[in-house]
Image 1 (cartoon, rainbow, N blue to C red):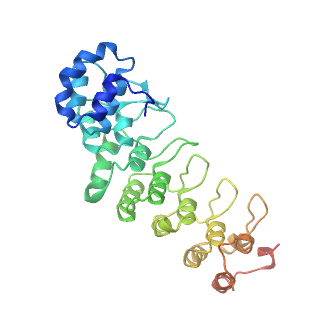
Image 2 (cartoon, rainbow, N blue to C red):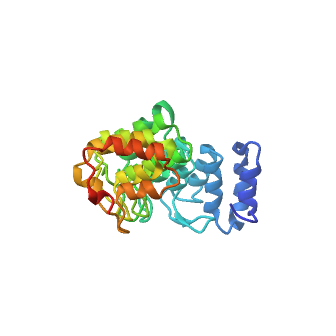
Length: 287
């Protein structure tokens, strides 16, 4: 938020009921250095009526690009998606807003992380945004919707909602091996955090490649071994060919090296991992 808000931003932010602010804002707009910021504040307050007034008065256009108070290029749709205001997203789409258009950011990723698609209608709401032009994939080097879905679970989203979102994304053509900004595939991200490990099963069931490498050259088995998750290790071990166990990361480590070096792996859990793959262990696994 602005360190020192302008009168228009302050009025919307602090009003007990923003519905009665139209006349106040009409008087202030000529003096507002960034009137678009007032529209963003209306979005954050969830006031569709006030946003509609500002658009009708041509204070801001539904497809206008501008720089927000954090210095990021944005649009009204992007702000609404990021604020989790689906009703406003729907209003903007109905009034001709494009949901994509920012080169460094996926509309769906923004909406998923912003909490725009929640509850029983999560998939339906996301579907409407996709129908309006949102892509289920994202350019390399940006956060993909699938990776955003996993990250959302890390941040407290309901795993049940996210499962439905992942299933829908895959059905509509999302790349199951898509990554985050750092080159980490969705499956690797799901394995790292205890809250999202059930999502890993969803991704594997949907066809995630259990031999895919992350930005460090690690397979999903490397990650499962490093976090000491015996259950996931077993699942991935069954889905992986023999050579996966002796695969080396870019630093030269096999999955068993990762397990031995990890503080999260107890002696008991390590022995359990060995038991799971006893028929597939070779000297190369430790070299």
